[in-house]
Structures are given as structure tokens and as C-alpha cells.
Length: 107
Image (cartoon, rainbow, N blue to C red; front, side, top):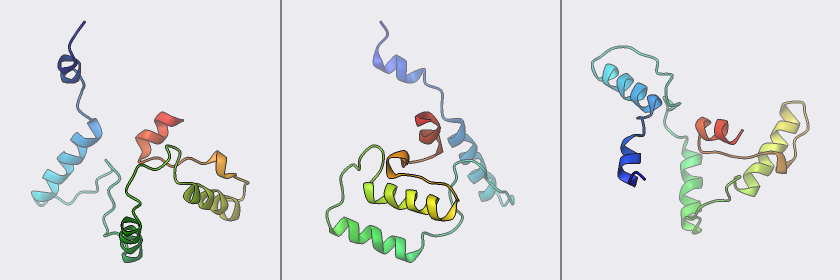
């Protein structure tokens, strides 16, 4: 049986990260690019979101959330889908992931 370090060494680097790094290098070289790699926004986080994060930290919300998402968030998403997207969604039908790769894996 192979050791853990051998297995880890055999893992291929993330193509997404490699593309992102190449895009960053090109931008540093002055090349005008539009990166479609990791989904990093080209704008700063809005101030009200920063403040909400600070408030959550002060309330002690510093632990892992449930694996399917924070119930208040999944409920709000279900309500939004029902209200704005024209079809019914229930809280138990919504999950929150930390990115598209995780969402695809979960699906």
C-alpha cells in the first residue's frame, strides 16, 4: 500500500487555480484580460456585507455551519426563488455550498 505522501503527490494541481494564476500573471504584465477562472469578483465586498460579517464574528458565529447551509440562509433563498423565480421552493430543497465545484459534486 502506498503511503499518504505518495498519494498526495499524485494529485494533479487544480486546473482552475492554474488558469487563475496565469490570468493574474498576465494582468501584472499589463495585458488586458477577462478571467473566467475562479469566479473572483472584480469589485470590493459591499460595506453592509462587511459589517454583517463583523457583527457575526462579535456574536461568536465562528464555527462550522451545517453542511447544507445556515437554516436562515436556506430559508431566505427558498423564499427568494418562490417570490422572484416563479416556482415553489422549500427550505429543505436548498443547499448552500462554498463554490461551484462543491455544488457540482453535491449534485
